[in-house]
Length: 181
Image (tube, rainbow, N blue to C red; front, side, top):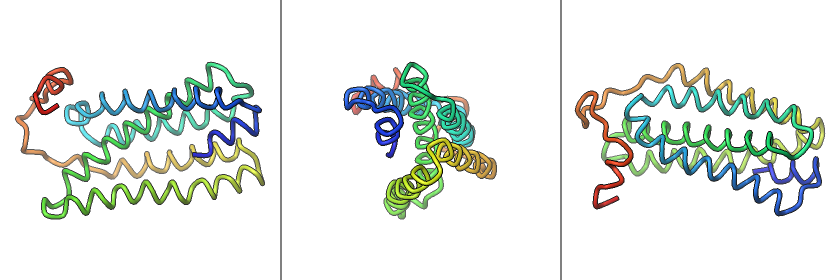
């Protein structure tokens, strides 16, 4: 959430530059969410949690080496969008898998609350960190947090799902052609 400030403070970025860079992140996240929806069913939840966290760590560390606005910034932001999509989709699927049916709405609410809580806490902490020590340290801390998430994700076991036939997960186009979709 503080990324626009980073661009404005460190690179004197214009509103248009900030908007285009943010669009790269959002576009990658939207495409990633679409693709990951079927993929987490086909390949499991944990791989997407782990790989998404590792991708976020790598992209965050990449910003330590950024010294100007250019293709590198757009690419790293797109990677961060994809990383978000991977972890969000896998996490949401785990919530649906593991929550008791009568408490599913509550579980989804808690899942959303965890993200909103971090959206409230992280910017304040990162802003102080960036102002006092520097943006590079803030990106290293973000990468460390993502690596911690990757390590914790290794403790997650994919639940056994009986709702779909083994080995039979519909493809994206098959799902998109269904009338409710």
